[in-house]
Length: 227
Image 1 (cartoon, helix red, strand yellow):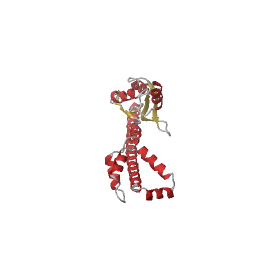
Image 2 (image 1 turned 30 degrees about the horizontal axis):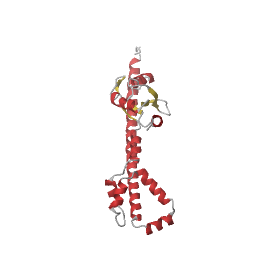
Image 3 (image 1 turned 135 degrees about the horizontal axis):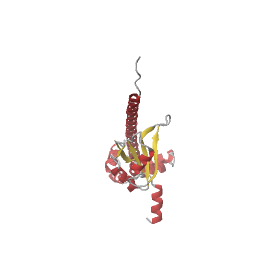
Image 4 (image 1 turned 90 degrees about the vertical axis):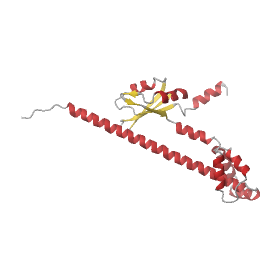
């Protein structure tokens, strides 16, 4: 890859430059939070999450660095860094998305291909077909299925009748795609559960902060003498 191609790829790939920074103290200013992140390197942008209805902070931010290496360094070196007495929690914000994109173009593997073959309702596909499909990615399998189905139902049916083993092979492809969809759904459910836990933790932090602030206000009230 030449320098120009590398530059274009770098400009378009923002998947791992953005870092999630959590457990930010509510009394820390934006400048303080940004300053902590800039201990690692220049910050291109920082977005402090706020409640849409109240405008109050949620206790976390998304920080974009100039490159992947700096973002990864932030994950290693900012984790546990104290800001206003609170240890920061840091991770790549889009690591799940990057992992899904990588899986989309990786071979499905022999284990999944064999399992899909075992689910075929008719005669099991030939071992050579299973080995071939094991080297295909989800992306290629989807393209294969889309190309096949684009010929129309009647043409697909005729081809399956005329080409030995084609019907079983296409059923195996569909099983592999169904398995991939199930994996994606399970991963999305886990992501939502993590997000809900983070939101609940943030709510708890706000409640604790309000309790501390209310206690301070109560303590500061003068005691009026009784007559």
